[in-house]
Structures are given as structure tokens and as C-alpha cells.
Length: 141
Image (cartoon, rainbow, N blue to C red; front, side, top):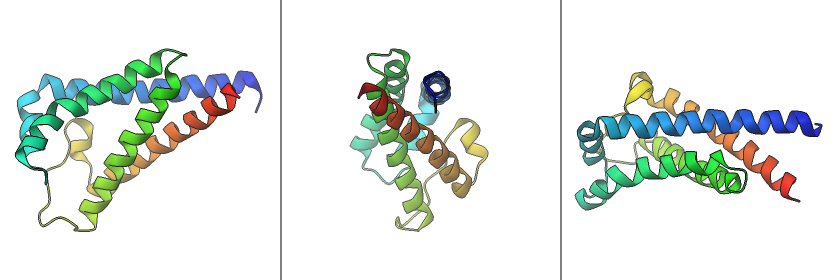
């Protein structure tokens, strides 16, 4: 792939990931009480759920911010990949009935998706993030 096409692909990947993270984090922060309640319904202890209710949207916003700038986009791709991998593993564990109960689903658009669709959605964005990471590593060489 030539440099111009790689650049377009890299920008496109960053655009989609930034949109994902801003949408996800803003929807959690706008309706923080609902988001916090959903986090408290997860399998985590209450103290960890309280921390995650703020940490997750802040990590998502951080990933979006890192993706905005060429100097930090590699870190944004790394953080995006780690977040999406973590979320995907969690969903897979839920689907495999590893937990003794089914936690509530995510908010926003994902609220209307089954766990399987949610996993596919996350894996799609994980693949985008990994492609972006690959392009950034290659470009820095």
C-alpha cells in the first residue's frame, strides 16, 4: 500500500475510534447516575465499581485525546486496543456464563444489542485499533 493510501486509512481509523470513545464517554458522563448504577450492577466490588464509573469514561476520553495528535496517536492506539480487548474479554466471559449472574448491558446504541452483537462490535473496533497500531509502528520505523 502506498504512503498516501496508508495515511488515509490511518486517519479514517483514528476518526472512527475518536467518534467511538467520545460517544461512549460523553453518554456515560451525561447520564452519570445511570452509568454509575450500571457499573454497580456489574460483578465488581462496590469500591471498584465506584472507581470504574469515573475511570472508564476518563480512559475513553484520554484515548480520544491521544488519537488527535500525531505525536501521541501511537499511545492512543495502544490505549484503544487495551480498552477494546478488556471490554471484549469481559463480554466473552459473560457469554460463557463465567459469572454467577448476567450484568446489565451498556448504554447508548449498544443497549439495543445482544451480548453476541456487542462482542462483534467490539472485535470490529479492536481490529481497527490493531490495524492503526500496525500502521503507526510501521510508519515510525
